[in-house]
Length: 332
Image 1: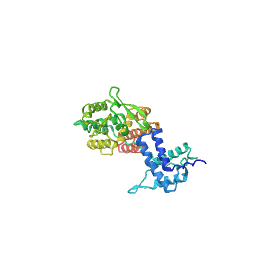
Image 2: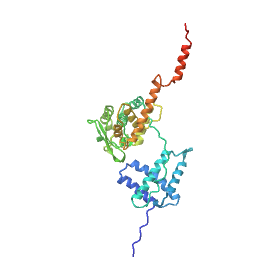
Image 3: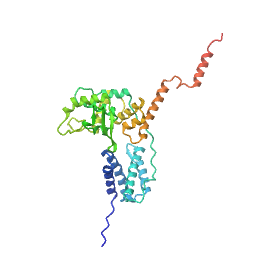
Image 4: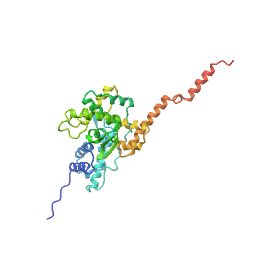
């Protein structure tokens, strides 16, 4: 008697195995895997509504209609999903179906031909150097928490770290003698980034005068601690930054990633090579870094048209002004 054939996995099972593949085999960070999980959960729920219980049975039409459905959804108060959010969701769907194809569970990839929504290019919004300096000085050094906050902001800007990289730092990750910080980036890729004297001084003050007072038995090797002795969270760092922004009198919305944007932009404006900045940021692709060159180009144009005496005024107006002046003179 032939053995009973194993029933085919449902799309829920397939999605779980795909997420395990991302975490274990691809080594993606927890935050990245969680982002894929959220996007894939919407897609799986949509397939169930369409009566598709096996991901390998999804068609190109199913996926194209999912993109249309997602694009028409409201987030509340009449706001639609942004094109960038829809494009990111489609990217997760494409990776999922490529996984099923590689695993031999599907004969083809139905997502390959689905058109990606056109995403308008949005340039980073860096802070000025004066704004950054005001924010970095805002915490002061009056108590252990202020010393910690100063070290956090100086390190984040001084090394151009992502917030996830910052909160993941351990005490041994900053080498004061070498003047560098070891950051664990996306996909668990490690990089060594130089860090300047201001950040090193702030970290030294924190480690000698503040961290011992914040540390508890459960603190472990974590660099930046909350007031209960645990590792500081992303939300905690965001709150620290917002407090510093208010105290600095900077009247614009500032996110932790804006400090990273500012780090890159200020380096390029100071003459750094774009490939060096790519390495410092931990970008896998140069195209991710080149967007900052557009920011500096825009700033150069702005400065030029503001400062150059012959940039704003048209030649026709200049000639007319001269003609008017000469016409008013007597010809004696």
